[in-house]
Image (cartoon, rainbow, N blue to C red):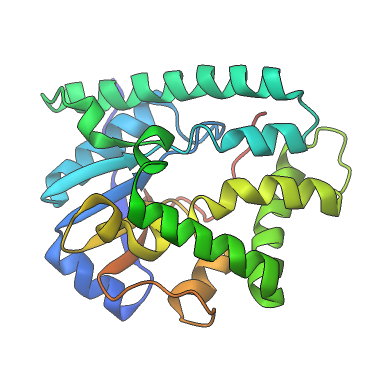
Amino acid sequence: MQTALELTALPLTPNCAELFARRDHVLLGISPFNSYFKRVRIVELTRWALGEFAYVQFHLPDVPGVFTLQALGLPADKARKRVRENGSKMRNRIRDGLAAAGLSDLDARVVDWAYLEENPVFVDLLREATDLFASDAVFRDLCLETTRNVLRHRLTDGSEPTIEQCRLAAQYFLADIPLLVDTAGVVGSETSLYAYHRVVPFIDALFRRELPMQPVARQGYLTVRASGEPDVQPKQQA
């Protein structure tokens, strides 16, 4: 019989630790094309989060995944189809995680593109991030490096992604940034923490307040992973 995972949460900064002590709200990042997020892992994450926080939601970046798939060479129509399929698969896994805890309010718990594209706080922050990508070299280079590392893990021939591929795929990461900056404002919580299983250099710089766009004081970041699990990039599939 499979035993429950022991999950460890590590706040990124002292302010993140203060927000974690409040435990008002957490947004669990769920990547649709990442093999890390198997059904059992999402069930365990859900169980852990519901035991820790007053309210739990899931960030499912479904539609923006089109940009990554197109950057990898998939035609637009096939990319949209793949995104729908993977988004549906992850929603079902989130539903299973909630059901295991006796909850059925899936739609209220999932923060996907349908939720975000009409949200004025998100729209304004995405516009700010997009403008900085165009105008600020440090901000842009960190975004591109984050995207380059994702593409490297998905290019099966071992080739280095081109700058054109990185710029296209960066639109996926840009759509994450508003939730790293102010999830609380987007979802209407007093405070919030964004939770994921690893930290990339952009996020570290963002929360160290080294970039022109900075998280609000009520926004924090947690790394959450199984005890003893290394901070490595798992294999991802396009």
